[in-house]
Length: 127
Image (spheres, rainbow, N blue to C red):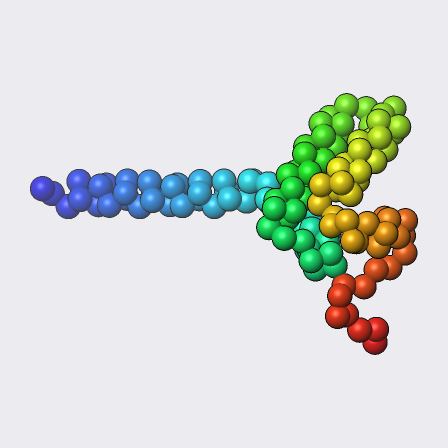
């Protein structure tokens, strides 16, 4: 094999490798970042505040996932015209959380919490 063919083969492999690397880097940059769970903090706070057992935590995850899916579906439509529908969906899911997730002994605290008043987790201290 003469040296010209060897150098052409090396050049072709180098260009192929560089193109592949550039394509992968470009694909990673163009991929939209994965959205964080918008209700993660809310879910963690509910678990901490109301001492939810595993079944209630699963109910909460399902309700929040369903709520997020319905809100995303509304975003695809004209959101300004559907403001009342968005409020209704929010109320419906809040009622589901109240009835399926929050233990009965904490219903009053939950009602205060969703009304905008602070609720402390059991054992929490004011600083």
